[in-house]
Structure formats: C-alpha cells, structure tokens
Image (cartoon, rainbow, N blue to C red; front, side):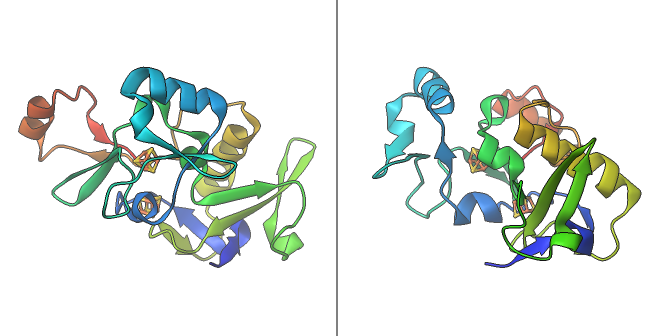
Length: 179
Ligand code: SF4
Ligand code: SF4
C-alpha cells in the first residue's frame, strides 16, 4: 500500500468503480454500529477480535455495495461510516508516512498531514488544483474533525441521466450515484 502526500495530487474525483468497497473491511465505531443494527439488523455487521466491521458478501465486497451497469453506489449513504467518508484520504497530526513538507495542510492555525491511498482510481497526480486544495482536501479535513457531515466534494456525483427508469424501479429518490 502506498500513501501519496496531497501536494502530489492534482485532483480527486470518485468514479464509482467500487474498488474500495470490494477491497477493504469497514471498521465501525459504536454509534455507527448501533445505527446499522437498528435499521438493518445485527447480521449486517461482524465482530473481530477488538473491532466491529460491516459484513462482506462472499465475493469480498461490502454488503451495502450496489451496482447498476458497472456504476457502483453505497446503499448506506444516509448513515455512511466515517471511514468510508474519508477514503481514500488519511489525515494525521504527525507526518506518519513521511514527506512532511508535501503532506502538510493548514486548516486555520491547525496543522495536519494528509495522504491518499494510491489504490484509489479517482486520483490524478500532478500539481494540486485550487478546487482540490481549498475545497476537496478541506472538506476531508473537516469530516475528520467532525465539523462537516454533509459530503459535497468528497463523494461521487455521477448523474443518472441515462437511468431514470432504474431509479424509479429501485424507488431511489436521489438523482445521483454516490459512493
Ligand atoms: S473512492 Fe476511489 S476506489 Fe473507491 S469507488 Fe471512488 S474512485 Fe473507486
Ligand atoms: S461506502 Fe458504502 S458500500 Fe462502500 S464500503 Fe462504505 S458502507 Fe459499504
């Protein structure tokens, strides 16, 4: 696994490939676990030695991962765990993966070190764009700090213009696929 400091990234945009929801187990905190259990039942979660996870299907993917015509979406959108909201970014108070100058990010007077998991398909390497720097990374930091709950720049916005009937059939009221 390779972690890239944010200053080497030009932009990030989720392309709903679903790779992350197939490759990783999602760790839940107690409140997240409780919400899932109340809404979907305890069998949608699984206990490890000292952590609780979302259950995975036999193919290894998250039990809440949906797929229509190879566009993947999160069936847990309204109570998406923080670990999923932050993916593929990691935010630390110390330069955990090195490259301190390239990973440092200032949020007001506070200093953080931000990296992205290179396995994500949505990363474009290069010089960070204004939007990525001041909107996307900022929102990831705010989510990490618990200052922001609603995702704008940190989730996919793939319009379902071509799939209005699918939406109707699934009784999904949103007009976007979101991961
Ligand atoms: S976050 Fe990255 S890996 Fe996950 S679905 Fe989006 S583009 Fe794919
Ligand atoms: S984003 Fe949704 S579908 Fe993907 S791992 Fe998290 S809860 Fe599961």
